[in-house]
Structure formats: C-alpha cells, structure tokens
Length: 247
Image 1: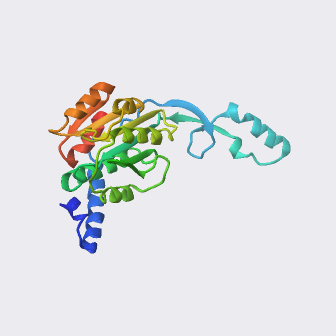
Image 2: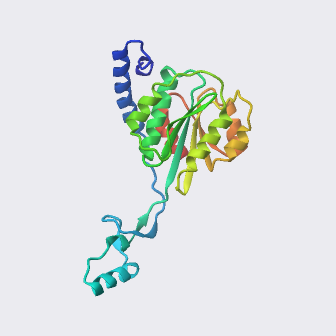
Image 3: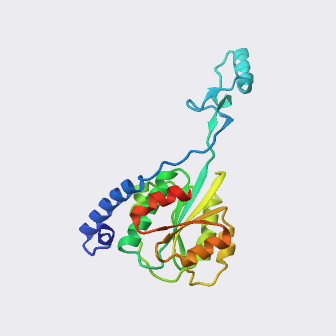
C-alpha cells in the first residue's frame, strides 16, 4: 500500500509515503542471515590508528632517520600489520520495464536497501528498461535512505534491453578494486530488445538472479546458460533470505 502511495497525486501524501516507506523498507532489508565475512589474510598497510600492530621491520628506516635527525617520526612512512577481509562489490539491476507499483516496486526497494546494508562502501544500483539508469554509481557516495527513496519514484514502462543492463553492470563493477564482483539481477529476464544477453552475462565476473515466483522460466534458462545462481521471490519479504542464500 505504501509503495502505491509513493505515486499519489497529492504532493504531501506522496512525500509522507516515501519517507515512511523508506524507513520500513530499510528495517525489513536488515532481516535475514548475517553476511559471512570470509577468510582474512595478514597484510602490511600504511599506518592507521586502528589498522593493526606496528610493523617494526617495515617501519625501522623512518624511525632511525627521525632519531638521527632529532625530528618527529613521519607517521605516513610507518607500516602496520593487520587482518584484511576479502572485498566484495555488488551491483543491483532492477528491471523496471513491467509494472512498478505495489508489490514489484516494494520488492525493488527492499532489494536496494538490502544491497546497501550488506556492502555500503562498494555497491551500485541500476534501473533498466529500454535504457539503463545508474541510480547509484559504484564509487559514488549516496545514503541508503536516498537510494531507496529514488527507487520508490520508479515507474515501469518500455521494452527490456537486458544485454545493455548487464554491460552497464560490468562497467560499474569495473570501477571497484574488490576481489569479488557480483551482479544481482532482479528480473524475469525476458529480453524484448535484440542483443547478446548470454555474452553480456558472461562478461560479468559473477551473476546471481532473483526471479519472480511463478514467472521464472526465462530466468532459469539464462542461469543455466551462464552458470548463474538463481532464487525466486514472492514479494519484498523474501528478498533478505534469498540474497543471504545466493551471496
């Protein structure tokens, strides 16, 4: 109901619905299993107050130089040893070519909030139909609340250029320096614009698909063709658990 009200003709009602829906969506997206951090590795990095223990061997030269000259140690030359978790970059692709009211719109908003909460420092959101609009770029700074509010303004129309969407995801993920780069596709995967969808999907390092329950045949065919993992969701409440399983 709130998702529908975000398109209300009354300006005040529309603004209130978007604020309230955004808060509920973010709370809902935080449910589900916690993210597994993965196996870390011990690395040497430039000094940070909370970055780890001082690496004495790597920092010996600047310390000795400061002592010999009677000056303070330049902390930018010090090194620390600490555990570093493998990074993961996420790119969410939202199919807006069909209906973007009610349940589908709420599902897209929850998916956006869930991606933002899982990896707030390295994610992007792309809404696509005949074109591909970057709602949040991989290296851009934008609050989760703002991203969700922007997604709630989406309305569906037009044809589906799935190949373009996947190529755009590859471009966004290419901006990240993370070791793992995952495109999350929320779509029935029925392309209505000619293009090499399979080739574009294979151009993404890793692809997972969230397909609507009861309408997943095309998505399952794409997943099988490119080796993607897939889950079906029946509305917004199923998004957090599906993402936890796929990722």
